[in-house]
Length: 268
Ligand code: CDP
Figure 1 (cartoon, rainbow, N blue to C red):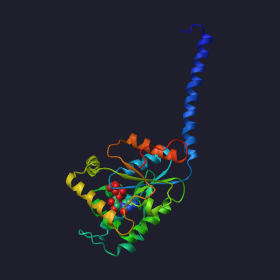
Figure 2 (tube, rainbow, N blue to C red):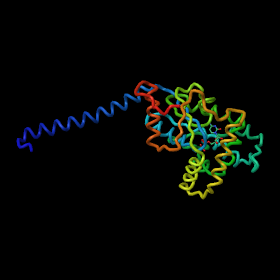
Figure 3 (tube, protein in one colour):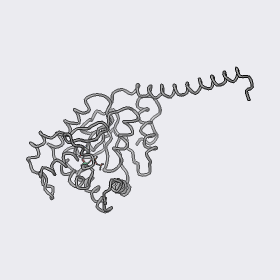
Figure 4 (cartoon, rainbow, N blue to C red):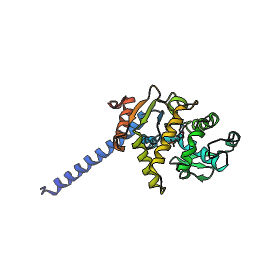
């Protein structure tokens, strides 16, 4: 016990200084890390429901990047084609879609919330109805060219993390960091199933699995910009990983790239 009041005040003052210094150091360390990372592009590609958007969002938050979801753009074009009656139930696409795209305004509001003009379409683009027709739409060369132009406009300045299927191979082949995500099909289908249930939908597991497999097939076999791993991409199989492990892995990768820490062992 400290009986002398002066000694007591000195003790409290010293303890306060220590706590404040630790706080100050942690802020400086974080800012220092962010400042030392230059304006770069991070490409996150991979199969359906591997958690690309979750990882990309975490990276954006941790390292102060702009997050862009290229899949949302293809989903937005699909919703537009469905609403305009330009895609039939058998996936036949009306060639009038090409001219109609010139009048389409798809953009992200803060938080990477996709809008069609003034309308927030985030919820509608995640339904099974859109998922069932997005890959045929995304295989059309003029649709890809239209989306790529928009993505380049959105990413014109600053640090960007973008997820999709062809970001590291076609959209930003010079991206400084490329990640290719994969996970076992049953794990991916379960994740997507849980996500749809949490949004109030009533999915059938077998249909979710079938949709993932069909999209994987179409995405990997189309002629224009097929889904494939860029040669210089780091592979992340997150079948057995949680969010905390993933962000630790990505942090190691990003800091390692800029000499801030060692790169993670898991790099393939
Ligand atoms: O969320 P999930 O991983 O299932 O898909 P998404 O990222 O929302 O992408 C939806 C669909 O858009 C994919 O299945 C692809 O057909 C297409 N896509 C693409 O072709 N190229 C991209 N860069 C992103 C998505």
